[in-house]
Length: 365
Image (cartoon, rainbow, N blue to C red):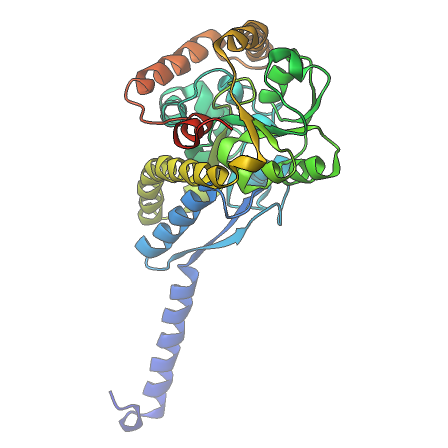
């Protein structure tokens, strides 16, 4: 169309319509603030990056994300509360470790549940989908879980060898609930530092040991300070990378945008298993290259039984007591349901724990 051939009034009308169209287009864009307490090098970060990029692509740019890593917006304990306050729209955090009082049911994933990361992740997500009380703990606080990806199994890097159950007595160890309760039962003094502060604390000698997911501890550099690596009592998977969106914000989205987010979230769970497995494999390769500089051990069957005797029953009973006094949920039924899902998915699990892979590939240190 040649605007020079049109009258002034017509040209003005066309320009006004163009401005309205542009305004409507701009208002259709949904901008989300994403925040987490860890950096973008971890397997959970890779899942979230895939998740956000996929949503932006499938929405044709109608949904955009502003990303805040490494506590640059809020600290670990403030992530899930930020969904209700409006400080963040999407977060990746661990309410079971950082918001224990507000999320007692989230600690259904207790230490010594399983060493199989894929089985635990699938079980956790199935519990959220099928148990109304578990789901309501999140949604009643304004958080809708999109997916929960696995962290690898618990490991520990320390300034001295930690091989036997008795070795944990008297040491200061960076650990958050529920894993902190297990180490307390073994006689350690847990120090509830956030992930970045824990890594710094190990470097400065504030703690004697740093506990965390197998790959994350190495990616964070814990092995460069604490030269003694161990499976930390073979506690297994004890935390999930829980990705949630503000429930209020989600409800206000168009049906089209909610559908995109739901579809990508379902796929993100599968991607999280893939990224976690690849991350563990990459860390094993890294540790093999440093074999001569490290001392690595795993818990023997005899020591494992000692750990189980001290930690399992007391932790489960403590959790069940909290559920009974602080919620209206049936804790025993929920725990049995979750453990049943774990055993179900263990049957088809392909996951091999990190230190087990290390010894298969690198031999003894």
